[in-house]
Length: 460
Image 1 (cartoon, helix red, strand yellow):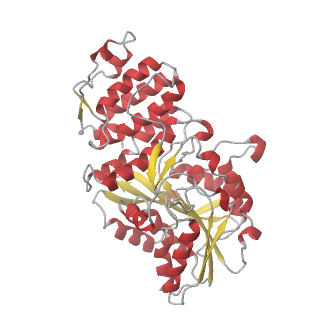
Image 2 (cartoon, one colour):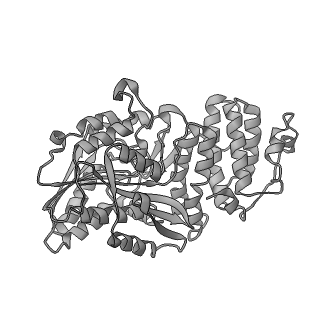
Image 3 (tube, rainbow, N blue to C red):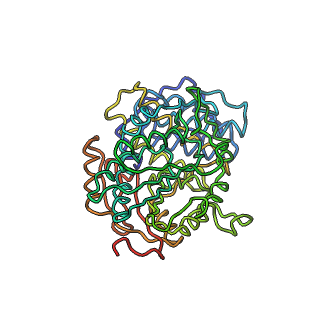
């Protein structure tokens, strides 16, 4: 959302250090011009950009002054602007601490403590707002249509929400007039070290899905590929908390190992099964920068999609957040991030108390993302989200073409959104066959479905 649309929410500014306004550079006074007395979204964004510019030019003194101003605005229990600002401030402190480790002494640190959730708690987490359920609903409906007439279905699942998507699909398959197909779900043994985190292993998740499938009389098999010793947050753990260290995240997720497993032999692909590829908030963690030495000038993301295409899937569904956060410029990322991630903060404000544990936990997960987007560069910056339009072009370049969502899918998504606050909506972008979740008219999450160009249309 553009910052001027948040201007109605203002935050009183009370500075304890009035010397900040007498900076010899005069730059801080310029940044605060028109903002004294209150700070709305536009003024906060201006300060964030001013701080980023100071950091990029190694002006730690000015950066510190701006951070002190932001520190007087930020509050993890305040209004949406204050809460969002608190996480941006934390990210800027994290970045500044590597430029000059002893220069700052504010309320931030370099790691986020996260509790490992139970399966029941994870279900409550994804139900808070339709951020995840929207993608589940759109994807499951598209998958259900794509596998019509098949007696065997194999889903290769790349997701960060631990198979929470599949009970609904299993229930729908159990009701098929012709009877349920045999269902096989394959997941990687490792996942990006990002929230939400679960306190049971992916094998245990598979056992629970198997029990549910047995109850619904759907033949079921669950497979885990990759080196289980590389598993991170999916591993069984007896502790209730874990520390997410952004500096280590990318090095702990061996995409290259996974890439080597994506072949018909390792996956045990069968000619008479419908292969489904499911990407839920996942492709962004594949590096999008070209690598001449390893991938012949292509990026890991493009190489991964080319490998997926070679498996000749029946359908590929891709769901992710609809924003471009992959720019090399820090100031560009701050502007885009600030004008996008206000959405969940604003949505949670409509129905949860300011001190709600569920709200604080959900916002902390967004804060972890902000810290990685703003606080890190190079291989340590693993959050490399691209918009639905950019992803669509990437899929086309990889040899896929999009297929539209049917009216049944649209109806199911609308029914889901009726269960949530009135600010949530959905729109269809016909040019790219996308369904888009919106909050107060602004794009939040996109869903798309694809088939390889050599695979023929699903309507054939």
